Length: 116
Length: 239
Image (cartoon, rainbow over all chains, first blue to last red; front, side):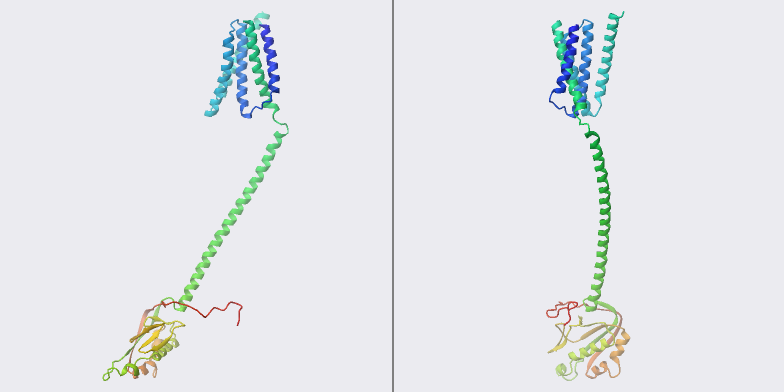
């Protein structure tokens, strides 16, 4: 479990480093999509952490959830853009709520474990 | 299981990291620092410039429109004046019918009681009679004269051609009707003066009927007006 967290942190730093170095210029119009994708991915990651703390972690669910969340977030935003409705807000709210929810669960779990 | 978990954590966090990195770069680092304040400033200046230009051009357009309108109006007025002048000159030249008070003189040969044909040349109305009559009418102030509806112009001739009298290249025969616009009393008295034309003509066995009209119309000259040889003298050209 701890190995997983270490690996996650290492992967995160590597990813950030790569992202800063990759010679791809993201067009300005895509920043919104990428931001929402990041939000969805973060949600998935926290969900995964929570699941692993609960010992309910399923790799398949984790991976499919990760990608489908990203796709859903981006797709919904795109749809909103086409319809001139800010669906991105729905994405932000939904994933934001889940993010805080997961974080709260992790916090409680850790508190219970280390500081009973 | 643990290995799988570690691997997927690694992959997922790697992707997340790449996205974060791209996002950081996209939102912060790509934009050149000094371009941000400069560009809007320049654009604002340009916009202000264009707006002033637009205002100026609009003012110019209004001014030009006004001038165009004035020019149009001037042209129209000028045209009206020219038209008016043209009408006047045409009228003076006899190219327009004239109407007004005047007299009608009818000259006719009285058929001779005895001879059949003897009167034809000896006592018939000659072109001199018509000329004298016209001259007398003009002297009495007639301004528009026509002989048998042939309007007399400045270029009109009255000459004999055998049994006819030619006016404006038209052959006329008796009876001759001379229409003249003018003051009827003056015209009539000019003709009927003692020892005047009417008396003389009557002595020559010619019937003269003078009738006054409150209103009569003298027709316009209808033939062509061609000046083949005479040309107007250019201004300043004195020969």
